[in-house]
Image (cartoon, rainbow, N blue to C red):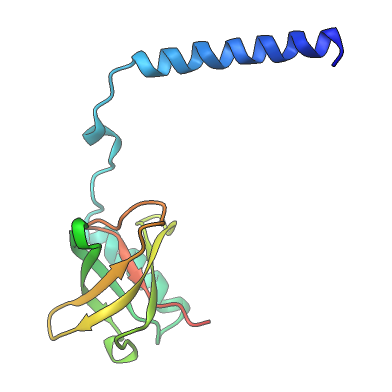
Length: 135
């Protein structure tokens, strides 16, 4: 490797160490990094937007999560008649970003229970939406 290339690598490595040290020294509050859940009005708008795009697409709201067994309880499900146990679903946040996927494990009169994947961007949380996308 040429001398100038070694110099560039050394300078970049040193810069990364300094940035990492500074970031590591900052005190962070995990609760402050978690955005507040969206308002019911925001969820109404997002849910309506999905329903307008595909009127027969089930969309519901995550209301509770049991993390140790990776279960999300979903209510306010539109088009619930188009949802069945075993269906694959997608979780999105209030901005429409995909955060995880799951499979419907139980449907009852009040809730739809979905087991979400451990490999998603993050676990679903109250205020996220569950969407069954037709492929």
